[in-house]
Length: 209
Ligand SMILES: [Zn+2]
Image (cartoon, rainbow, N blue to C red):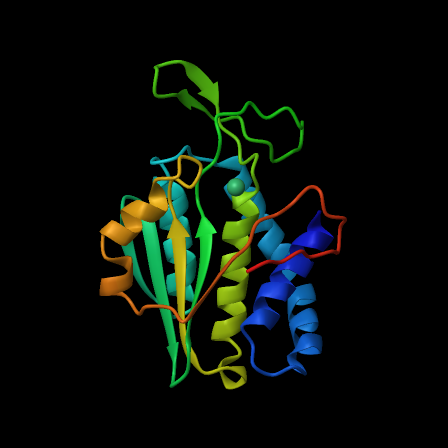
């Protein structure tokens, strides 16, 4: 999985980088960063939060994006996060991660498995797990943000990085838009979102418009 994780990170970084020769550099950089990013992924995996409750997840994402020098706004449409990284004239590219986990009991027995339980909407005790990979998506966005912030000579424009709450319930995107996502922040010319896919072999990437 960690190999596919690195490949996914690579693909997003390449997609928003204007210099084609950047591929080798992205790989070198990713190889050097991947251990740290995997630790970050494990942190998110161990601490999942259900839809509308992504408080700590959003706070950590905001902290990581501030650390790369982005202007960060929290509380957009609930626990939504918007981070802007400006780098001169050029297109505005939005990159999005979802933030929420699912009411699933983790049975993987991994050392960093989630032991979190909470009450669901009907008051029943449920397990909480990043069973849909949003922990990977969050970590990818942070990795891409770190790469872009440290390679400003390779690109020009504005990056809008968003943490979307309540994706599983289909309500978080709407809440962010209603809270002025495209009015209060730069409106993107392009938007990229990533989702892990257990039907694709390790090392392969699928894409669609
Ligand atoms: Zn998902």
